[in-house]
Length: 399
Length: 72
Image (tube, rainbow over all chains, first blue to last red):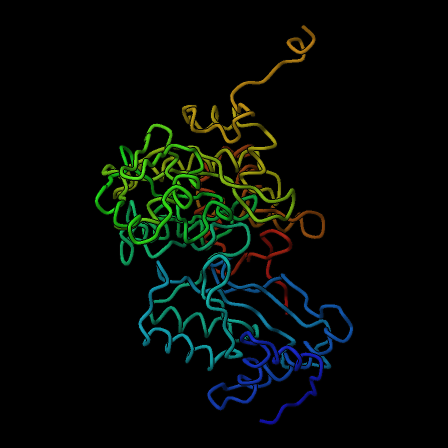
């Protein structure tokens, strides 16, 4: 099908060095695999108009979904449907991705074939939360596409005030640094909290992200309400011969390793690398730089942190340590119990659209610890000059 | 409380608030606990049945709410 709408402005976006979404929309508009090319055709037209007028023509939200689920479908409508009927409805479907983002080519073809049949043929692989994002379909197609996805073992992901689709790094499947099985935990959390994933019941969204170590390939510390990051107890294991090999092969160990250590817990005399493990904060920098020479300690588990989010209401937050070390092994009941206590606290006190981290900031960390029954620990000190456990009363200040 | 009776109470709460207030599921659970002594688990199960039957639906308006499906 030839292009319906001229697009001189967005054509410019095809000329850069990077892959262009405009090019992909044009491919979908012309593809004979896509059953209804009008989605992509009119998407190009509406996008061009938005660039010309410098304003969006999308409306979000409303009442769309599949029966029984309150999550997984994000309603989107054009505010000029008469002009662009192909995108009068342009709903997004979130599909729960496999842990670690591992696919067979067969699975990818299956998803794409389903989407060519019921939607625009356009996808985001993956959205920022991790889901497979299928972009653009009409309300009448939601139940059929859900039925077809379900019949092949796929399920919808989270959206709205619900648990969002848990996601994780590749974990032990491909990485020797994984301190726990991120894939298994992600699967178990997904299964355990199906109700909370599909049926929004919280003040706002709640994200789990599982990272196998502090390198944090899934960026959990910056964007998950609950970040579960692998760590270890005990000393970093050092192979001094390999350290010397790195030095011999040109690595400046003083500059690249010792001086880069955030806690200054290392020293190098030209022959031997020493680590004061008591001061190590397990950031993984040295281990990631000298993979042959250094290994994590032998007792492995995870640190649980709470409260990060990308900015919406009160600005960006990083996660806060609430459990310094936990052995993470099936059946994970200790973790699930903790999660449920945190949700109770959030449910009781949280305002509409208030993330759990914002609630803790508003009510104070001591209240959070008391109500959730979590024992205070020095590792919870987020900023060294701000003691979260101690507050001066007005009387104390006057004295 | 009998499940059917609980479902009726939830539906009526949502119906009476139409045009005045939107209930989040959590708000409904708290109200049912306070006014009828219904546990959260019971309320969740009843709401789920109403959703599965299509008697009530979820909507998204800057947060997730419970509503009666529009008549078309």
